[in-house]
Every structure is written in C-alpha cells, then in structure tokens.
Amino acid sequence: ALVAPEKLLGGNGRRRGITLGSFDSDGELLGVLAQAGRWIKLLAVRKAVQRQGLGTQLLLKAQENLAADLPVGAARPRLSVGDHPGNYLSPGLDERYQTAQAFLLARGFVASQRYLNLRAPLDGNPLISSERVFTLCTAAEKDGYTLRRAGAEDATALLSMIERSFAPVWAYEVARALGPQLGGEAAAHTPELPEGAAVHVAYDRSDAPVAFAAHDGNNRGLGWFGPMGTLEDHRGHGLGEALQLRCLMDVRQRPEGGVIAWVGPASFYTR
Image (cartoon, rainbow, N blue to C red; front, side):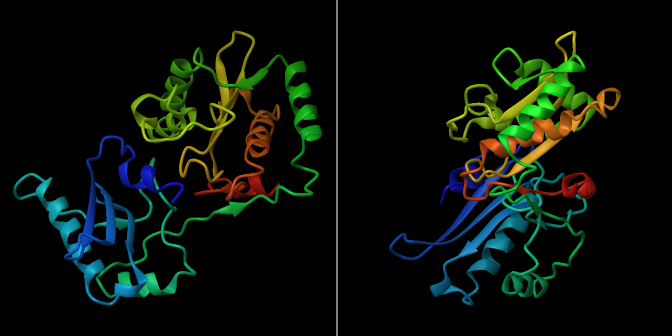
C-alpha cells in the first residue's frame, strides 16, 4: 500500500504509462496491471478470484496496448516483467515466487536475465554507524571534499553530471529521490520524506559534484538504496562508502531499509 500510488500512477520517463483494472459487476477491483511501454511494472489478482483468467486477460490487454503504440508493420517487442528502468517494484520476478513463475511460463514468458538484490544488516553492524560515517567524512574532508545532503541549489548540476557521466535512467531515479520539492515531474507522485532529499553528494574544491548516493528513488518510503556513483578521477578517497553509509543511516527505521536493489558491483557492497 505504501508504494501503490508510485507504481500505479508514477512517472515512466519517456514511456507511456497505462494502468488497467479488472472489475466485477458491482465495480469491485479484482485485478490490476500497471504498464509502461513493453514493461509490466505490477500485475496482481485477488487470491479469491485467481485461476479464472483475469490475469491472462490483463496481459492480453497489455499486448494490445503495446501493439497500438507501434508504427504500422513494426515488429512487436516482447513484454518484460518487473524490470522497468526508473520505476520498478522489483528488479524482475522474485525467484522464490514459484506460482507467478508458473503463471508466466505458461503464457509464453521466458527467463531472460538474473538480477541480484543484497540486504545490508543495519542493527548491530559496526560498519554502518554514525562513528564510521564521521571517520569517513573527516578523511574525505582532509582530501579537499565536502559531503552534504543535496539541496535546491544542487539539483540541476547534480542531475546533469549523472546523466552525462553515468546514465539518463540514473538521473531519473535520483530526481525521484530528491522528492517532490526538488525532483520535478519525475517525483510528482512521490511523498515527502522526513529527511527531505534522499540524496547525499560529494563536492570537490571547485564545488562541483563528483560523487553521489541516493535512496528511496524507487519504492519511496521503503528504504531501498541506490543508485550511487563516483567520477573516475575521484575514486579511491572513500567517497562512495561515506555517501552510501549516510544513506543507510537515513533508512534504519524503514520497512525495507538496507535493501540494495539491482546490484552491479557486488564485491563493493559485500566489502
């Protein structure tokens, strides 16, 4: 319920979002599908009415929507479940959810890639503490860096750096993490968080952003971490670890605080 407005109504970048419902004769909602282009962000049917074809009909309607958006004669791309860039409920389908796997396999879906989520234990972990954050930030400051939470004066330069040096979809996610006050259209359906902007940034001596870490850019309010990055010329100063730990301190009390989603450099996070 916490992230339903974001998943069903939130922005989808350049892709057209469509939310479909399946209703009974009294107007009761029985099933829902949220679609962005060829991506299915969310598909759910009430347990009491499963195995009656509602999920299948929602998928067929999603295929019709996809075909309607294509030029005449264009090959239809395949639907993909769960991994919509920039606004995903989960990076793919949880492999433990065998009922859903069987449902999708029976309707022509195939497994394509395997993504990894990690979970950082936040309670009683000496590597994730205010003392550790202080030590890392002090060392970074001695090397000439300033670390702070992003503010209104930072948004434009920060998002431009991320789009140029990392990926446009990361800039989109960070805009969402900045929240409705700073993130513009991307964050229109995201609630404000108690700490404000869920983005921490490192600046060099010229006050240019050179590293960032964000949380709650997806599933806002759950405490998921990411994305993060450091410009190549500024690596090796502990900036990434310092910024990540500042984010994890923000989310200690969130329902999913410490989940690091869609992990790239697993060795960095395990360390």
